[in-house]
Length: 328
Image (cartoon, rainbow, N blue to C red; front, side, top):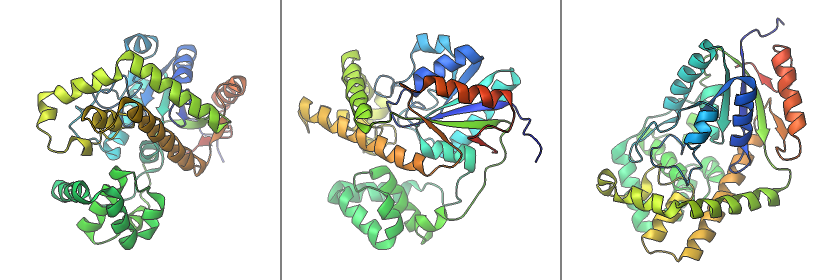
């Protein structure tokens, strides 16, 4: 098989709070790279502190792409991300620089690197009806409804994951077929103009990741996370939204819990505990998804930095031969 001579790109994948941003910025500075964010929260304007969005100083150190693309009351799909990411990658390669794909949104990586299964698009009327049912009966009841029509999907979707429950029910009601049927239909992504080294950055011990999650949340709170959410709530366009907690932006981990706290539903201590728990659950789902991905190399960024650099050096030096290089 001939060597893959496409320009290189590096994908830094991993759970939230695993240290991907720091590694991405260091690599961008050292290797002449630009960072393409693969994070579903960072696309929203105003989600800065709670989404750990790189600030102006970090963006000076390393150019970032796909930040602040939408207002928080707007939608943004994985298919839109894949198209925007391809445009960003082409521009980076055209400038003779290294694309570094960094983030933890598995669906975005899937859309870009593998493609998405064909399925019905969003239906605002159906989605609104499901949201109304959830407000009346609760998401666990709708999860039970999903289990009755699509046990395969229900087994993968937690009863406290409203976004995925809503989407699964929406697809079924729109098409008459369960979402698991559509997900089984392959739709390969067109080849990228780069060869990709896929690195998973994750602490070796789960307890380490849990401590990082708590420390990061406390740092966000000190920086004014709750004030940021107050500012979002005060936006005129946001005040026009009937069910703001159903917006994808506000479903972002931490934001939903902060919003409910500011509604008076929880004490501060309860809010903090719920935000930590939600972030840990997100990290667990991310790790589960990552374990199912082929052609990845796993590293603990705190203790295996030299090994990360060695894997990258070998990949950059010998086209198409390094382990973990995906022909996409």
